[in-house]
Image 1 (tube, helix red, strand yellow):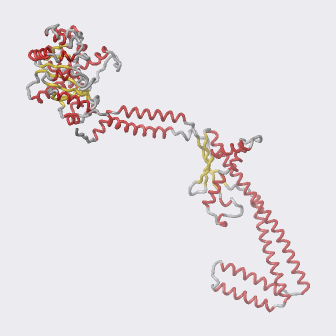
Image 2 (cartoon, helix red, strand yellow):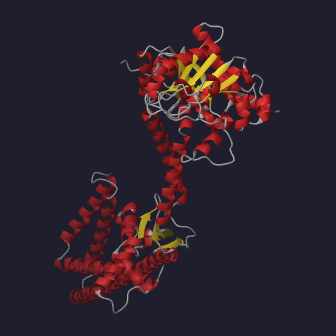
Image 3 (cartoon, one colour):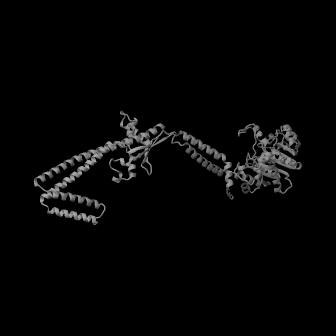
Length: 626
């Protein structure tokens, strides 16, 4: 069998969404419900942030970052690691009173680790700012933690800076004492040598001048090369002084050496004395190396879970899953969904389209409803409870017209069998409404309730099932005994005003199924049944027969060979396409005159826009009610 492929257009997608909207909505609601449960089960997490500004120039007293050649980025990263360190966490725990004296080392480490897990520091890009971020399930704890860590870090910075300044001052002080002693010793040697030798001190002056020239040369070499004129000039002066040194007597040379030593010791002592004063100032100055720019505050709402984000993501996922499920279910649905699919797949014309009609009943009808409740639900769907000009009634006139044109007759006469492939496809309601609409149109019509498996029509008119068709076939009753007319309908409970307000209803007759035989197939295949049906065709212009589903019982196959036309009723989305195809094949196999198919209970989502009469149904219905 050739597989038929269908191309979906935009309307097909829209039709699928409308048809499966309950799948989408239920999936969306279920997803949001699970998101709500997940969100409420999560422990709320709060976050608070303190911002600290770090001054790199004050980290090391008396020494700037430019002097040391350090990178600002690495310096700030180092301070971030210090904030995240165990030392700061321990000091914070002690300040908060979370570490007691009687605690074991394991307990102390647990408290410190807990703080480190709750607090983290990170650098603000392109700035010397550091965020101290605290997260915890306690909203009052996070602000306290962040601010305490900031305070402890600043205090530790002050202490470290003061300690470094004190160590530097002590070191300089020790070096200054040694330099002072060396200066004194060198001065004493020079004085003693001068007293003993009576030297004039020419060598000392030359030595001082030589030291000055060498200092200038060193400064110039930082800027120029050795071949620069200024450097060459100083070299010549140094060379001239050195030659003068060679001409001096031995005593003058010694005097120059001692003078140079005094000069060097004096400069060293002066430098150390200056550094010592700076170290004393730094030690006394307690300027903070960091300041709190933005203190942490108690958060008003938790960071996690973020209900808005969770529900937004959940809603989006629910919608996507709903769409996926809708298209998956549509793909798994093996029924036929559109008119074109039915006609192409079965190679049969669609003779009629019966729209879905909502009927309001006083009682709720459930899937476990009794037969009485089913009558209450189905009875208002009879065409006699609608205006003869209503679109609902017109659909059955359209069905009769299509049958007429398909058979090239003035009016469909003879007998018409209505059947379906499975149960609950609406063949009974379609057939009785077709018969009633034909009678209203002036055609003398009889309806035979020949569904011997589950007879139902007699309940709609409030009539007894017995006597009926089977009783006439076996000879227990005559034809006149089993035919019911409008008089019987009045006795059965149909409203008088309903019968009198419908013109042409006197053309309608009804034959119930009668006594249910043990083997309905034997009754239906008997010659008496054929004889009775032919007799009815001679009396009435149109004989409408309702039988059991084709795939379940052989009743329809037997009767289909006797009647003039066979019509297959299909409820869209109810039966798989292969089952419908099987029903059609069985009817054609017994050489029945299967002339077409009727689509029953069609909703808007199964229709395409060009079938405008269906969409206009409610509009014209409102106009007719006026």
